[in-house]
Length: 132
Image 1 (cartoon, rainbow, N blue to C red):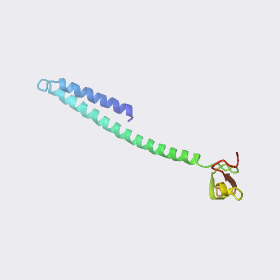
Image 2 (image 1 turned 135 degrees about the vertical axis):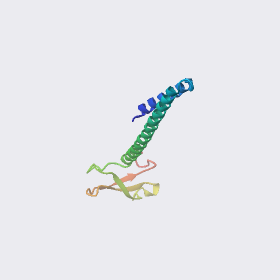
Image 3 (image 1 turned 30 degrees about the vertical axis):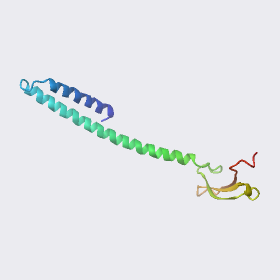
Image 4 (image 1 turned 90 degrees about the horizontal axis):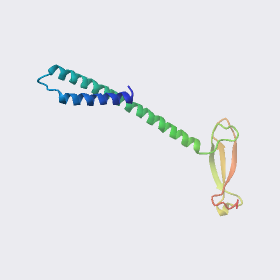
């Protein structure tokens, strides 16, 4: 049962409850019992729909969590320029041989794909001293 059906069942239950208030029990006992049965059925349908909706929301929350993690993984790091299948991972950073004294570092990166053997060095210049 979907959410719309659950809302429809809840609306029907509210309508039946209003009808019950208007029935004179002493005059029309059969109608009263019929309305009580209809109300019970509508409330049961509402309960089922709400349970189904809770399960669907839980599923969607799980999917959303997985997608967020996947997006984060894809956004972090550069794709390997050789194999294009994995990310480049920083394996070590050392002071740059020439500009290390002013905070420039040399990053050593390797592809995370175990089949690809690509590695490279990149200069990390946080203050932008070299490229000014």
